[in-house]
Image (cartoon, rainbow, N blue to C red; front, side, top):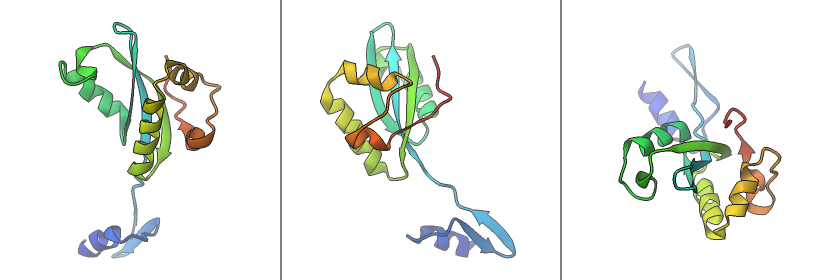
Length: 130
């Protein structure tokens, strides 16, 4: 198993490894941008995570903590696949937040939204619905 760990640590990893006569497929890490909405506050929250569904559970369990802890009715409104690179997801999250535009957020929540510029790489995760 040591050779498997070493192989996974290499920068150029194949999509699979062949060790002791068995194939091991590497797990691809993907980062997502997600949009939460609180009806009580009438506010949106934008974040990035490898698992936005688990992240929502964490927000709901941590009342009173930071921005999202002030409200306990957050709903996941949309999720977009960004990249396997965390820095890309962070860059896009910061870009969206810097716009300070509720209009942009609501346009992005529209199922017909097609990003341009920095947002062009976003891929909507289709199973997130109202």
